[in-house]
Structure formats: C-alpha cells, structure tokens
Image 1 (cartoon, rainbow, N blue to C red):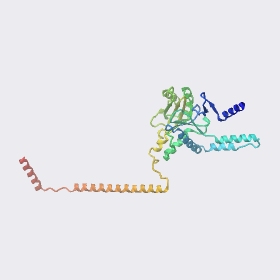
Image 2: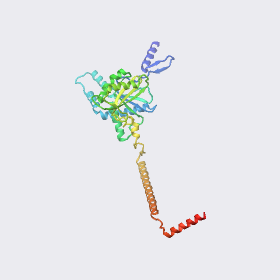
Image 3: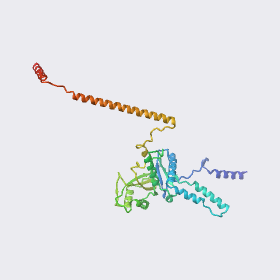
Image 4: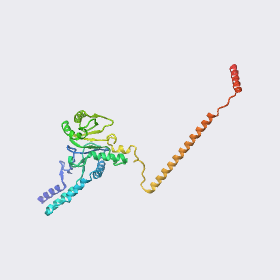
Length: 341
C-alpha cells in the first residue's frame, strides 16, 4: 500500500503540475510571460491604468480586421499549403500532418508582451522580421480611417506607436539597427524635414543626447530638423533594456498618433444616437421642434432689429425748423437770464 500510495502521489503531482512550497502549501506553476526582447516588431499602445486587458482585446480585434483587409493573400497562401497532400502517405504520417494543420490554423498573428509598465501594452507581430504585416502601414491605415470617418474605433486604446524593429538599448546596436530603417526615407535625398520623438521608460542609462547624435550621424547633413511641419517623424521607444525605432508620417496631423484625440476633435461621435425606431422618432421630433423654435427666435430678433433701426432713422430725419424770430427771442431770454444772475 505504501508503494502504491507513493505512485499515486507522483501521478497526481504530475497531472496537476503543482509544487510544494517550503511551508507545506500547494501552488500552481505560473505560465511564462512573453517579454519585450530584441528583434521584434509591433505596436506600443497607451491606455488608462487597470485597463490593459481591455486594450489588448480591442487591439487584437482591430489589428485582425486590418490584417485581413490590407493583406488578404497571406492567409490564402497558408490555406493552399495546408490543403496540399502527397499522393501516398502512411496512416501515422497523415495523422501527424492533420495535427500540424490544426496547429497552424490556431496560430495567431499577434500576442501581447509584458512591458512591466502601467498603462502601456505592447502587441507583438508574431514572426519577427519575417512577419508579412507592417506595423507602420497598419497603424497609419487605422488612424487615416478614424480621421476621415470620425468614428470611434476603440474605447480603451489611446496612442498607437508602431515599432519597426527592436534591439538592446546600447548605442552600438542602435547605430547598427538605424541605417536599414532610416535609409529608405533619407538616403539619396535632399532637404527632408524630420523630427525625433524620444520616450524612455524604466531606463536611466540611455540618454537622449547620445541618441540624437547617433540618429543625426545616420541621417546626414543634407536634411534639416523641423519641429512644426516635418515630413517624417522618427519614433524611438526605450523600455527597460530594449530600444525600438520606426519612421512615421502625419504625426502632427493625427494628433501624435492618438486614436481618441482624432475622433473627439470636431467630431459628431458624442451626439445622442437612439436605439430603436420609437426613440428615433421622438429624437427627430424634438430636433425639428428645436430647429423651428430657433428659426422663430431668429425671425423675432431680425424684426426687432429692423424696427429699432427704422425708429432711429425717423428721429434723425425729423429736425425741428427754427425761425429767425424764435432765435432772437431765445437770445433775449438768455440775456435776461444773464442779467438776473
């Protein structure tokens, strides 16, 4: 019984994947979190504190929609590879292939990365530099649609900051990573206006002055800095010991890539929208009554203004006619008054 009991104990421990602490309590093994690391690309997303999980869910939905919209042939090529099968295979190979195909169908395009910073999440594009999705183009398309339609695409996501590639936060690796990212926008060109947006989180050894020196040496002296109306904005995001870089357009136009500011500025998204036909009819009637009352008030103001102007004109026209006798009489009365005084 003792031998069987020990085997049962080991079996239960293996199935539940639990370990014993020093004080004798049981606990489950924590899952390993995906960390922010070099050779990645994705998007930094800012949100309110304690709303990171909701922002991640919204980012997944939003990026999946635009991935299917902008890259429709990526999934089609994967499905074609999955459907292909050799003419003669064994049962074991067929079963293994089916399991692999099921795993491929469950593969995700994106995953969240732990930034160890409140109010900031990072959505990693799975595949690294070989991933077919471009975070810069995808974020620009999202912001352009929000700017054109003034529709609120997200509730919790605020700023969308794309990252083309990451490396360790050292000046040597930054000098190696910067040319492939910056050359398509600045090499063999003249008088390109640019500006650097630098943000450092949880790192005190990576200084902005050193970063500006490296970026300036990479770009060259044929271009100039313009803070108000740049052609391109270089985003450099440092989080802990990892540095990410990208080049974006329309940074000022899209309100520093803030999805909420684009919608709220001059938009009609906050106007009341009725949920059913009855409320819709009531809302339309109230709006029509309000417009009629406003028009009637405008007519009253216009009528009152015209009547007051007409009275002023009549008073100006009716000038009293003075005769010579009346003038002499008034002068005599003035002289009498003076004498009395």
